Image (cartoon, rainbow, N blue to C red; front, side, top):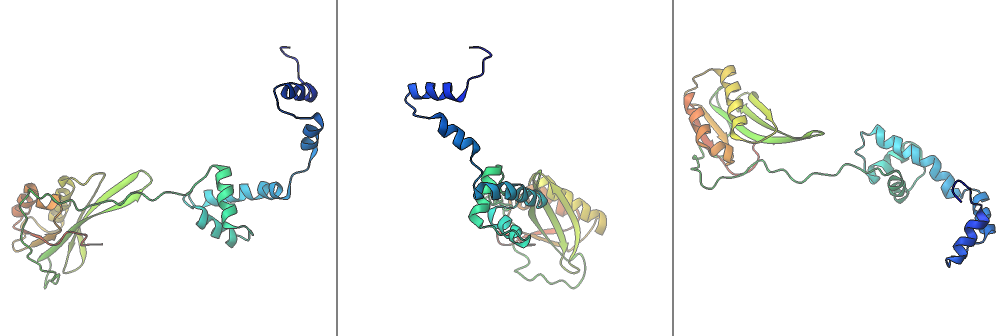
Length: 223
């Protein structure tokens, strides 16, 4: 039988012997039956839905894609969009888990709060406020350290890295030193209680430029 094509009749006979009652007429009727209205409409909508998903950077889920389709003039339901997305094997971008940028080190000495929520300054280089934040990217999470002069609201130092180690904070201080001077006596540098700001190296680096660290409450200061 190798190389010999089997006809519908012989296949149906074999299936019948195996306990599956399939008549040749049933096969031919299904083969010649025209597509249903749903299948015909799906054939039009599927490429349209995929194109909308592609046009929106492959991040839209069913709800946003449904709204985009409605704006584009397509009369389609949300559940239908979800079904077509499954048929096309596409999905929206998933939210990542909450990223924590403030991680306390309870074993480290904590500097006093020299600001007491009063972020006013009468001149430059009197009060700097620093904090860590993050930016989701296609390549992963990018962590950013900012140092802001409270007097002018100018970013005097910053650093972007793929980690939250103390080194990124020290690099931001180095940028601020380069832009504002190597000796800034009387400067207070305020931050939260993250382990990067309670580290010994952070305090030593500020002391080198005549600044003193100040620790406020846990939580973002610049966001």
